[in-house]
Amino acid sequence: MLEQIKQWIEQRWGGKIGSHDPDNLPHPKSPGEQLLSDCRLIVLDLETTGLNPSRDEVIAIGAVAIRGGIIHLSDQFDLILRRPELDIRETVLIHGIGPEALTQGQETEDALLYLLEWMNGDPILAYNSAFDQKFLEKTLRAQLGYTLSHAWMDVADLMPAFFPNARTGGKGLDHWADYFGLEVTERHHAASDALATAELTLVALNKARKEGVKTLKGLHDKLHYHRRLQSMHRF
Image (cartoon, rainbow, N blue to C red; front, side, top):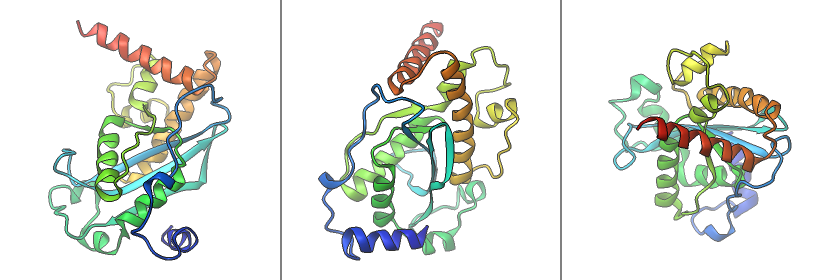
């Protein structure tokens, strides 16, 4: 992927970054009548230096695209960012990204520009998406001055919305993966977690199709309805 970014920089920016125009970057697409069978969905996961978006930072990005009900492994994003100044002592045992990896990673601005181009404004899904959304939007704003908001959907809501009676033993990614017999090769690795989340997303999309949910808006509305029910049940 590092070589892909180098080639992209040469083609897109003439070998130099720094004078980019945020207005020329892809704009997010709103959930509408796009058919789920046709549209491209981005499934994303981040590794960070901690859990607090106001204090901690993104250090790795993993993502894979779903299109036509298929996970396209040739259409994915997997990078460690070059951030040697960050203190990762509290989390290195979780994600395994040490000082050497952060020193040899991809320049953050280059990587984020490439990520935005690669995502092309498509909707983003993540497990517990509020976490990834806060971190990614903060990083894009700080590094690029990019303030547009993508459409986000939470796979942690998507699964119980379509499988309300599933007895998973918990609400985590691992619980749902175990329930459906999916193998997660390496937890707390951004690309691996993104792939596991994408596999769960395919399970949910297949159920959505059987229930007559055919469009991106229909999926978005299903999630909104599920969250309303959950909110009502709290009282």
